[in-house]
Length: 333
Image (cartoon, rainbow, N blue to C red; front, top):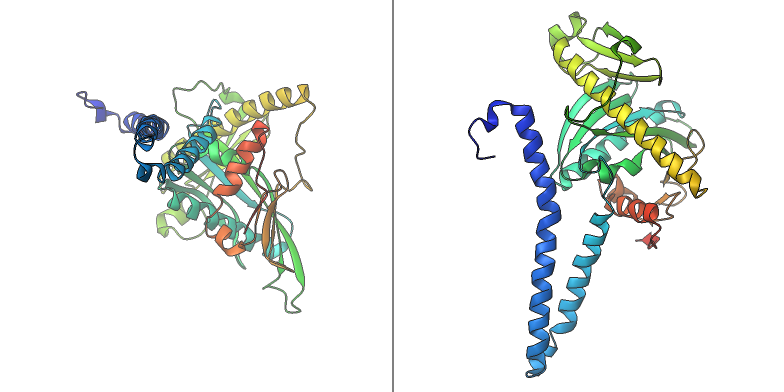
């Protein structure tokens, strides 16, 4: 990073900076754990001579055990793209206006989680619903192991509550689909035949100034072999939207390759997960009681509002342990 000309290519330089951050996140706590282990050994020696030191030993052992458990969890983030940033897309599904509102609530939840973890975020695309909420939105979340933590969020999220959009106050079930792909660098080889991709331009909708709304600046890419469709309209420049859309397509195809490998591996052990409608990964209840429960890990939290304010790390950690076949503490108040 100190080399002359390092910042000449801003995008490549930022990739290096992000890679360094990811390495520091892993190496620093490991160094601290080794140092704490040495300190504990010295404390045990002194405890044999002075009882006052002996009283401090249990607390130090407990602290070191927590550090080691955290390191074990980070060791599970060993996937090919786990260190990458994440491109997260939310789509409102069944449930009418409630589903649109629910999709926007999920968008806020992930943005809050990113803020709590000092991750940077960028809005790539957003389609607002005329009544309330959003039809869909795509954001990039960048930070150490962002994709590694968030990759387990892909799937259907189900909300049960008394609908604020129903004059009769009836209970409503609504769904939103979340898709997470790794934000991969240009150095990663993802083969795309441009002849397989249809490029459509259209006028961006929503707020954004006269230029955005009066020119065909928005871009939609359709990859025929896979059926993957991505779109970007956040920038005023069609060129920038096009570049971002291609990056999104590369990310989705990289994720598709990863899913195929996982399916092949899961088939060996007959543990392939269900996908598609009716296979929600998490249930969020506001009625008759307040709780959020993951359908895969059985991990649950009783504080619905805390979860929607971004307190989802317990769910992310539980999915990592679940994938590795480790035991999970199922309930948190």
